[in-house]
Length: 258
Image (tube, rainbow, N blue to C red; front, side):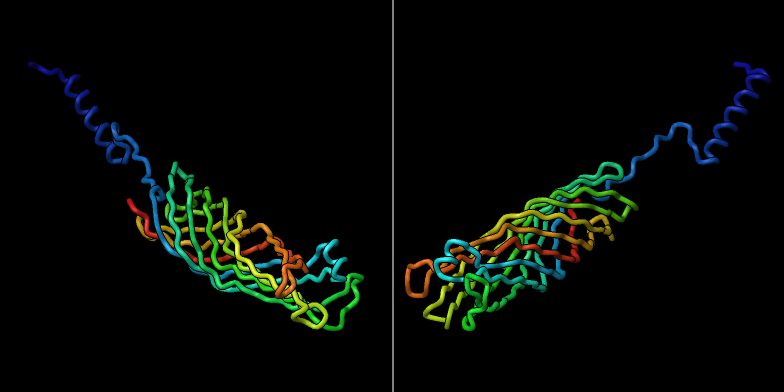
């Protein structure tokens, strides 16, 4: 087969053009590769941090207080302590967005007590006796959704929220006009439901090890209980414990499975 000068020149120009395209880093037939979904997968881990709780309590019951000449004494709690526990969840990454679900269980040492002076029903001081209140948050659990944005390949900023539960202990003592046996003790424990919202930042040190700092705000339903005079079944006071609010700042480390 014979080639003319024009044919040879065309082949040379074609090879040269192909070589130039490769030299410039733009191969003719290469398909762009999608970035790896670094944040997709399930993980387990642990967390530790600080917690702060607030709650209001009183013995206000208009009918009962009028019968016993007891004023509506109140008190406020401001607890602080340590929180720590375990967590587990799963994420799905789609381009720069990450959506996931997470559950956790945390122990706390939040507890506080208050003593208030006793009042008559008309609001004047009794002059003797007092009302004591005590609360304790023993543990907190939650199931939360997470929605985040990958600001850098290894850094995730996210918001989170969902349902929460707290194991609470409450107790009180209304030592009216001289104290016991003219007193009304009460004590009860409950698992109370509520909600939680928060935000955080998480860093992927490797494809498996994740580190985060997170803020969460919880609110749990209030509790109430009637108490009887000591040694009797005669109702003497109603203790009302209001909404328990808890704020936490904690650090966590997790291991993500492939």
